[in-house]
Length: 433
Image (tube, rainbow, N blue to C red; front, side, top):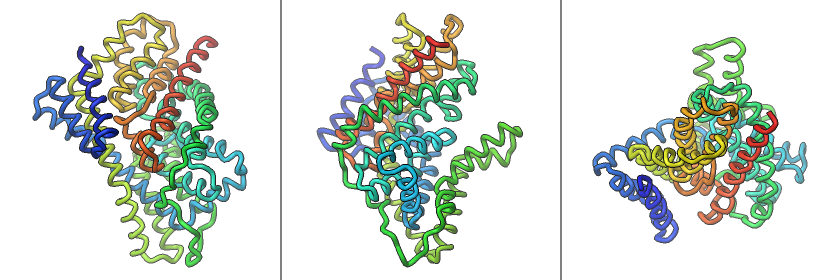
């Protein structure tokens, strides 16, 4: 069986991390070597795949995560997070704070990469939980469900946009259908996990909890919102303007997530730091501590990236999809199932979506299903059952300060609900249209 190495690798990974309590990054490296050799690669080729996977994964992420952590730290230390938090609570009320964050996650998530949205919004979520005394997962999980929907279903995210091109789907219709499918998915996760969100109450990550500092003035609410959401302004604004006036090198540059994050941090240094009376040395100390706080997360994500590359290099992900491609079922269900199996095996939603799309592409001519719905079904499958081989799993675990078991019972279950309900919504839309 061609994909047996993947199954064995995932089982070994689970045992190393949960039973032996071995460091996650070391565990990933050992499992990568095991799967690579079992999959037919030499040790040298396996090591090359590991290095390539780490490089490809961290190449863009280290910039986004690094600047995102810096921006989050500046927003927290300056008191901007508390000001934004108090405004949200005042506007929506403590009882409707989940709805406020779902809307925020949806709006922020559409133009932004998932990781950028995560590192920008999670510090605000932690501050809200701290100030309102509400359980952290009760506040944060619905917002992350909203981000997951935008990540898996909606252009201009990389995977939905790429698979829309493979299926030759209309991006506008994909976006409209994606919103229609995404809303019930988010709300179902919110209601289904209510008891879990109230039961799991981790200690808040105090890195982002900052008491009011009366030594320095807090900038106005407008400045606080502008700095916190500046990446959204750059990335979303650039995309909108290019849609209206056409391609532009300047707009393309401003819409680049890495550059947008850099410019946002520079603005934060001035408006949330220097302009409030803080010395440059003090502001830089904030940034240094922010970088130190994400070192472990970066290593774990690098391990997940290495595992993904080994899976791709051994052609295991493609073999998984081909085995399922011979099953006779609805194209929508099949696209979801192929993406879901690859997602569980590989960890990367993007790899799962693109691999599933490449397998499904030859079947497009033999079906009357709207290609936009195949995009959504594939995207929904690609976020199914996130577990320990997914970088997002570890991001959630570290930022929310929960155990692996608690992450499985909250994050993993949330992603699974969003995925399954998304599929059901796509099937309903297919029946109507």
